[in-house]
Image (cartoon, rainbow, N blue to C red; front, side, top):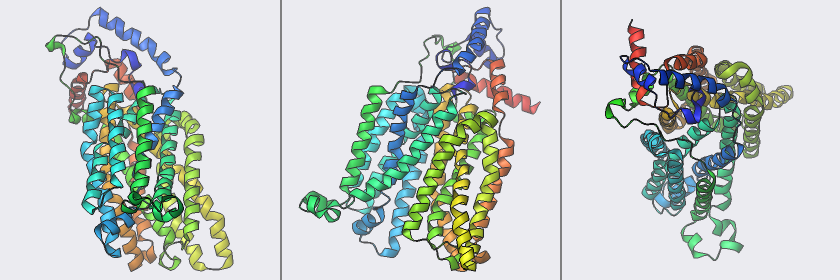
Length: 515
């Protein structure tokens, strides 16, 4: 987050002799550097009071909306598309559709850090525009795939252009301050939820239009030959509209270093990824980020199948319409928690406070599902009425754990050593997320199916595992970094936006530990 560097957007890019001294440890600071440091400290409060640029956040949120729309739009038809393109048996469809999504996430994981470094080097806006163009065309082409391998290729091609989400996160961080970041990232998270909602709707409504709408598209040969082209083309057009909006209205947030010294001896070495991870607090936050995403993706994979599973096997026996209603309630509850509850709660108890609250709630949230199943297994009218009185309320309240998604992003912003490394740090976090997303849904859905089939622990084994994983996060949340202390330390040591200073600070931190 930019507010962790007291120099803010403009001053953070100035090269100061005092900082080189801090990194090298053998040069005395000069008066000019001291005066610059004092001016920077005096301007910190003004930077924190900078109003949130609402229009810029809105434009970035629109670009952010495209990513989940593109990702989730294929979900309603990917199974049927894979079956037809590969002439697969019903039993093999799940494997190939899962393989396509896993390879997409693995591709993102491999390129994410590259995009983060590109955004730090060439600027946020060029990387965002280029990535949006790539995602738009790759998604548009996916619907015209005629074989399984073409589906895999076009999906992985979309994964290659993973620079959108990492760049948008970084730009929102750079547009906001310690006083406005909670509100900015609440809208960021809410926009993502809207994308998750509209993506499947677009895909399902437009897939196979010749058969869904024979009066309108029945005579169009193209849609008979390519039944899944229309939703992909529609999402591609949406992506290109985001490209146009980004080009026209988005402002660059990475300010170039206009005071860079020409002398090669004054240039500290570039920051490596290892140096960034070694910086105090970074590794802890990255691990917590991955742990939270593991909880999120595993729960998302389990709960729809759990709702559908018969009560006798440990589920809820929900009908499709009941599942849809509960998913709608889930989305509404998350929106309320993120948009309405999170900003004032964050202002009151801080980032770590929100994370601790969510960490305490996660095990309880997962533990209520077996209890609700026990009510349904009792089967009496009173027990069933109690279930319907408590289950929707329990889901709505439990969705408060979704605040951890926004809180951990703010923690990532706060722990970033300098604004210039924020893009790379976001890329590291999202590479971890992509890796988790590549294996966790299939793994946990398979474990749920195994537990239901064998009735291990009466079919509740998966929830015991989920509670155990959640308790791990509960323990981790007690050891998160003190961001205010880290900010004060950086102010004392004079950390600038120049990432080359970071290597010297890491060496100093390691020396203090060994002493």
